[in-house]
Image (cartoon, rainbow, N blue to C red; front, side, top):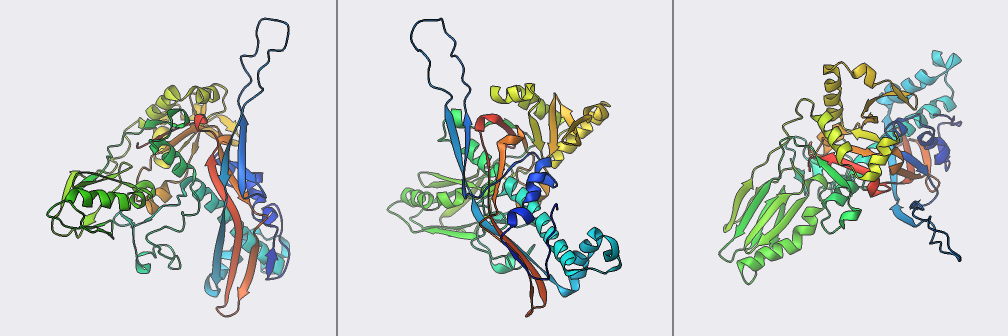
Length: 462
């Protein structure tokens, strides 16, 4: 960090923007390296404005004034939400974390364990700041307000869990109908992009353009047929869904869809589209490679698998290179202009990045392709477009069941906006005498969004 926090073992402050978030603007963390535009604001609602070009104004001379209106302004509103980041260090692990970090950064006599309270506190705050920056990056890409908890062993999105089920990372996280509190704060870039391309009611001119990454995955499709005047009563991914019998089996199926379709569809990459034709309820994953488990159906609720679960089979040789070329060729003209001006960038997940590197190595071009220096970093280029690693595949594997993990954005870095409001929050470091632990907390507001839909082209398992 650029600044030093001075004080004793207790620190309370409202200077989050100086202590925690100044690093976001200065580029000494991963956010700039991954192509974000970071805005530090004192507002909780941010309006992103842009103006269309003033063109087609030259005409043959005539007397009088024939000028039209000036540049047309459009805007997009980003709402920030309040979040907090807390951690505690027990006595037995304090040395291995904070004290060790303090010795790494210490100067002069502190290297011999002669450390002031201020130096130790600075180490605590530095760890806090780095973890905040890491999580802002993770949530900025992967956040989703409706994300459920996903069982790491089965890959199933559990729509309802108990506290005992929800302890894979931290047993203090609550389980609330399967919601994953690590991601539920805001809708990040990918959540908003997927919502955009899946919204069939959205006019084509406002839709983000896409390319498909074919890796063998498919949509899972099940049907449940109601017969004999029975209720609709069965479990979907661990949660029971029940609707009482209606005047007819078709009415029962329709009531089931009307009651639960919204809840089932708001499940991030594990969203389920529920429809019915007559007495047949159809459940289909909205994204390829996701899984539906229907169980405990009562009598006269007949389950049939229309399309079985088919996860990704992995990338073919040279596939990433082909996808990148296709994206450049099929992107909208606004993105093509960015490519021509050298202002475009590919942001791709790990497997695609490695697949592309193998392609370059196979033709002996890797060295020549990594010579362009951007912001002090040598980056790989393809067709004049810089390639940057979008390091989120570990989160998709661990927390999203590995669904749709091959993703690429073709855009300009200024189009991806992370906003943080630190002025309304505070940071605190204190010692809890009752439990003999040192605790840290920071509160702030944040949001993430892409600014213009026509300046981004994406590829995924769509």
